[in-house]
Image (cartoon, rainbow, N blue to C red; front, side):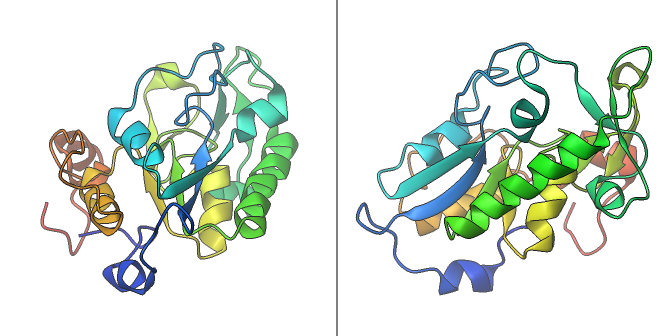
Length: 218
């Protein structure tokens, strides 16, 4: 069962038939689009399913990396100190640099999260495809505090929260079940490089960490 921020079956049905002349318009994390904007100056690796979708002739991608815009590349990792991106946007939490000093770097993150959401509105996107577990682009899981502590929270990163607040459907590179439905809409399901076919919240790690999401089949 998709999560509330995923495109629903009704949304998928309401979308038009996408063509090269009238493509699906997708806001995408820069790293998932292959830009070398990760904290270490790379794209973090290969994401075959995301790249497959973005390469469809009936998809137009709008890449954006809020972390690169906020702090430059290479950089420290920005982490939410407590809770998730909704808490940061509401002023209940902050974003800290993953350094010994854990500097408060909240303001640039909020500014560029809002900029990413504004791009989605300006380009009238149908969908956002964003990197999960990121303090900026996460949708289902984020780190809480420094990554070495391996503590997590459910919910989106700061940019993910800004996009969700606008009612834009959001899916991550980890959400294979939902991406299958999107690719079916694009007429590209048959050749897609699926792994286990599960969404992030349906996998054993998520369930062991947080428990099964109520109402899902996991």
